[in-house]
Amino acid sequence: MRISLEVFAVALKTLSQHKLRSALTMLGVTIGVGSVIVMIGMGQGAGALVRTTIQGLGSNMLLVFSGSTTAGGARTGTGANLTITVEDAKAIARECPSVTMTSYGKRDFSQVVYGNQNWYTTISGVTPEYQLIRNWPLATGTFFTQRDMERGNTVCVLGYKVYMNLFGPERDPVGEEVIIHRVPFRIIGVMGRRGALPGGQDQDDQIFIPFTTAEWKLLGSALVGYASIIFASAISEDAMTEAEQQIRDLLRQRHHLPKDVPDDFTIMNLKDVAEMQAATGKILIKLLGGIASVSLIVGGIGIMNIMLVSVSERTREIGIRMAVGAKRSDVLVQFLIESVVLSCIGGLIGVALGIGSSQLVSLLGHFPMLLSPLVSLIAFGFAVLVGVVFGLYPANKASKLNPIEALRYE
Image (cartoon, rainbow, N blue to C red; front, side, top):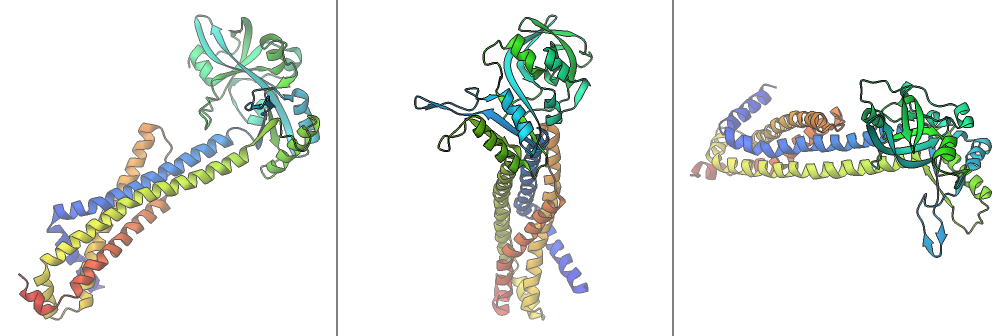
């Protein structure tokens, strides 16, 4: 143990004699380790954000959209033609064992007016089950009921962004009236804040009204009984795939689609979306980590170059040490430890830099950074490995010097 401590002491003393050179040599390792931590933290944070957003969409939810149809050789996109009905949604809840409840909806865009304030937003006509399926709490007030649906009452629930733009944070809007399509609606609640979906759509920038009210008083009589989307909640996460197949089979049967005709609807399974996003996130983390690792390799090359210079500068010293009895292994260990000490110090500074930078990005950029102690440990371990790998050649070269020739070296 005494010999090891002496070797480390000599290594530190040697490196301290060339402070600027040692600092510049460590810089590559420091940047590499810090970059690995920041990049992987950013990738993991992005993945966590997507997972949280998808989980916030609802409890084991499947979405059914009016699907693509082909007319005159032209295939229209999802939602271009209404092909699913209110009765389809009710049949799914009634006849699909893996589905607990369904909701359905239509949407339009309109200017909403309150006093001298106005806001252009999405008007979503949905059923009372929508809030339960989406597992979406309210900030204040209540959601509309089945009785509101049956009577077509002109009540509405504001999305959080609409509430902020029409009323501001200091005012309770419950009981107030807003004008939508020249029709007065009484506000009964405000939805809690949810934020944007992965595709960029702001969930808080909409107003919810009863589906029947949307059909009877806002959207007109065209296509009454049709829905643009069905929300279905599976009995469990494990049952989502089975529920998707049951919905597909039922809708094809109800729409009288032959086997050779494609679906006229589209089912989106949020579990599949989450798994796809998770796989994409893992690829992104590996890619970012690989890019950042290049800096570590560059830092390792810098260590090797400086250690080769050190071997040349200390050739006579090596000769003297060998002449007084030092073994080749002693010389090899000495130079190898100097290389590892360089990379260790650079790695520790890099870990501190990476954690600090991650906190700064999270604070200033409002971006979630998922810091893992394991990632920091692996990054530091990789820095140590770089010191060993790139320090081995200079150390080996020093240990193989001929003592007599080393003593004659000028």
